[in-house]
Image 1 (cartoon, rainbow, N blue to C red):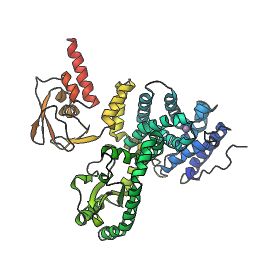
Image 2 (image 1 turned 120 degrees about the vertical axis):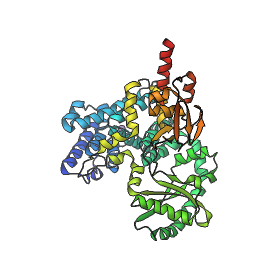
Image 3 (image 1 turned 45 degrees about the vertical axis):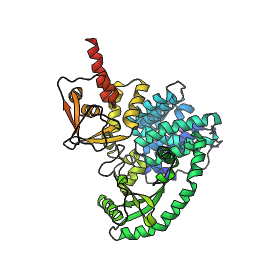
Image 4 (image 1 turned 90 degrees about the horizontal axis):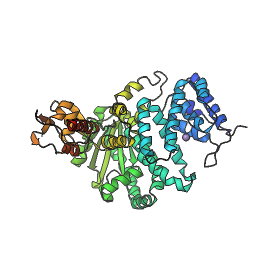
Length: 482
Ligand code: MN
């Protein structure tokens, strides 16, 4: 008797052609048989897990190879299935994906001191090869977190903290807002139980009050917008708990400083309508100038785009609005996975091309060529990818994307290594500044150079980017030899 009697594969197969449907059904049967009588910590048949992982990916409209690999993702490690079995039955792509996922898990399980750095490095490097590996890993982690309560208590906290630190970060870099939010919120109560309880206590009355307020005022806004905009949807979203906790920490736990606990979200059909909606809101309600964010003109480095504004809304209440098109919305929720969206016509036609355009991928490929040490890699990630980013302009209007705290030295090296080596200052927004100046978002920066200038040890204190630091170190090393 099969250990799992009522498989419902509807979610996995719907909208796919008959070949793909057959392939997915076959993969399910194969995995079901391979896992046999194995059980999860929850006592459920093991197959429940790969099936759930595949369903999460189906929700992202992932392609058939990804679904197949998700169903098979634990067979290489936990059952008698061989690589040959997988490639014979499901082809090389499925095997590649399963093998990569298994490899990451292998490294994760090894209990050495730098495990997390090394894993993170492997995850990111695997990502540069094929983003689907990471999507499967994220879905795998998401489902494991959903059943974290069944894990031995001694391991829960550690798993939860790692999930936030690594998987949450990875999802964020890929602009998978919904995935990041879910992973963090599932892990939060296990990672930091006291903080979680405190937060819930603090925000509960506010949440209720805010939700009531938004429900009451939505019709007023609907009427206002419908005078000038044909197709739109108005909705509200509740801020994810862990990201709220992070934000509260930055605001010294002062909840009255948080205006987006519950925010209105306006979804329209064109970019023009985004700005039109913003204009309508600003005409009627006074905005807080500092909180008007145009992530359409200047998207976040992970690709997030939307307009944000916080206004004194009805009854003088401060309310945040997020305005975006359907497309932007899809990308904000699903991020990189949206590029992989499966479609009958194109079968993820330009996914690779889109993906290759991502700055993060290019950077990873570059790093892979010279970084071997996990802690160096981790520093690079921390400084270059995880930090807040700023946008700085050249006098010609080219945008350079830099980590917060970058100096003119970092900026100079993004233009050319020669300019970096000889930079002695900069003119920022028309004013001379020294090399120790910290660039600000939106600065226009013009580097000044001198032939006599060269990198010194002090520069290492000022440079933030991996590339600049690497170049400076190598020049210092060379000059020491002379
Ligand atoms: Mn798994």
